[in-house]
Image (tube, rainbow, N blue to C red):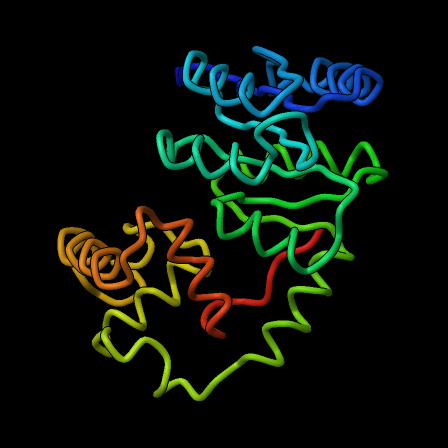
Length: 223
């Protein structure tokens, strides 16, 4: 008999008590999630992420002191295993792309339906990137305007590395990429390591952000 799957551990970071109350009620109603902490400031979010190492951290952008962008950058830099899901009122280009560059894996607007928030928590917990419909449309329009010719994208990468980067941006794991390209998992792992080094990024999430911005990979997923 297989062991029962562990629930996703979740931390909330938001300075508004009413919003935290609503998120707390939502998360505690999810059978596959467990709330393990709440933060009211960016500094508290950073400390709580360090101490509890949650699977998902639901992050507001506007908070006293260290804002959500900087908190996300520090958290992901220290613990790339933590999936940050931004839930905010801000839907401007600067905020969306700053959150992505900081390492956020999802971006929702406050006012999203309960089911959307639950699906987003589950999705980023599984390693997916997820966006609310409004944000996804904004990203799609932006990527469409910037999409260059494939030959000009990341000239420092080999054709094989560029192909693997596109699959990474599509959300595939190393084993899935190996099977798709008829390569050994070790070969794919070495290619991914070379890609991260050449692009000077810390992890697959940051590589995915660069790939999407350059026109590689799929259109952003939306709820």
